[in-house]
Length: 117
Length: 148
Image 1 (cartoon, rainbow over the protein chains, first blue to last red):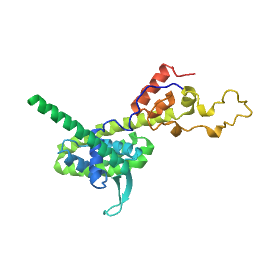
Image 2 (image 1 turned 180 degrees about the vertical axis):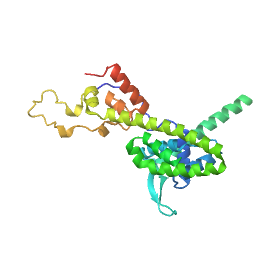
Image 3 (image 1 turned 90 degrees about the vertical axis):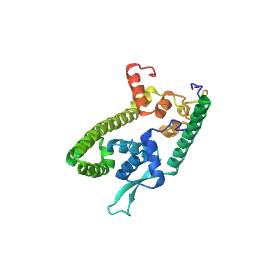
Image 4 (image 1 turned 120 degrees about the vertical axis):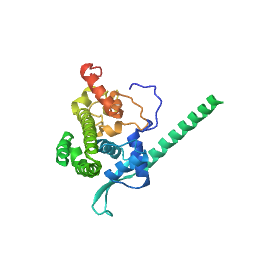
């Protein structure tokens, strides 16, 4: 067995991509179906990000594979629609990402203040 | 336009289409209807952006599917994997008395270490992202370094 001198990394230590972060943020509030996700992401980013249907469902497929979200049939709508909701693992990932961003924001703010002073 | 979009969905792998095809069509139709109310130019812009997004996403899905299929072919694993310790007969133990059987063979999932520590090429491949897997496969084809 070849020993590799490599520090073990926590799983999924890489920062999330913008579409993934926006999808998880949108689903953190309530379960949503595809069209509702596109609209919510658009309003969440002040119209800056408009996901195409292909990009959205590609990201949803990867999130389903990672078990960060789950599919279910939403029955309380006029038409039966398949919707997506965040799993506990997905919520944990979102919290981790937000903590990472908070840390980065704090560090950047501190450096800016130091350079201004 | 919806009919054209449904035809374009055939660019995706069949499993993907079966899972998301209807949802994608419904989503496209609703958004296209909304754009139509805003004018022809808005509809045209939307159609072009959707087309680009669809082709890009379909390429991504095919690459992911291809690397998965190649990786899961038996030849890839047996040719490039280091010896499985679970299958090795310890030194000094006779072949007839060795209790290692084929049923004890480790599965792909068993090889994934939760700490992401790679100990052989097989595990490194399992833990790699899709683009990296494709790179490994390309290198393995043209530079067969891991072949025994």
